[in-house]
Image 1 (tube, rainbow, N blue to C red):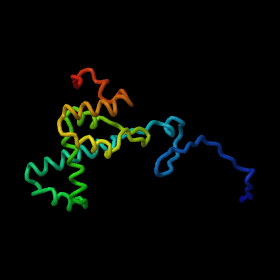
Image 2 (cartoon, rainbow, N blue to C red):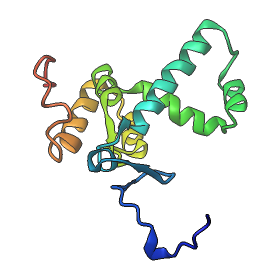
Image 3 (tube, rainbow, N blue to C red):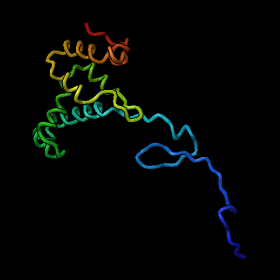
Image 4 (spheres, rainbow, N blue to C red):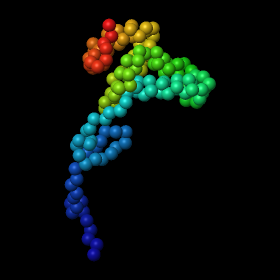
Amino acid sequence: MNLPLSRDDLSVVLPIFRARRRRVAFVDSVEAAHGVARRPAKVALMLALAHHIQAAIDRGLVPDRSTVARRFGLTTARLTQVLDLLLLAPDIQAHLLELEAIDGREPLTEKHVRSLCLVRYWAEQRLEWKARYCSVNPCHLAERSDRPQPP
């Protein structure tokens, strides 16, 4: 027995929420749709990559920077920019590795951090870091009471 159905004959009510991501995903709760997305900051990933590349060069897995640049499809100038992040003071590097992007918002750009690499001495880097970022966002280096503060 086939009865003709109209739009008014059938209705389905489901709670569906759209999650904001690159792909549209439908989830069954508001919390899942509007949850906080956290991931490592791009500058943290670049610093980790710089450590990985330098370790490979030090172990002799690759002969030099130009070989690494060719394998990654980068120019040697760009690879030098990435590896320059290793010139930062160790405590600044540690802080950068802990940074997170929350809901896609980066806390710092690599360009701003690279300008800090131009400062030659670590003590001066720490002072510059504190002047630039701790005054705007006190969570940067000042919140860490377990580490000695720069002079």
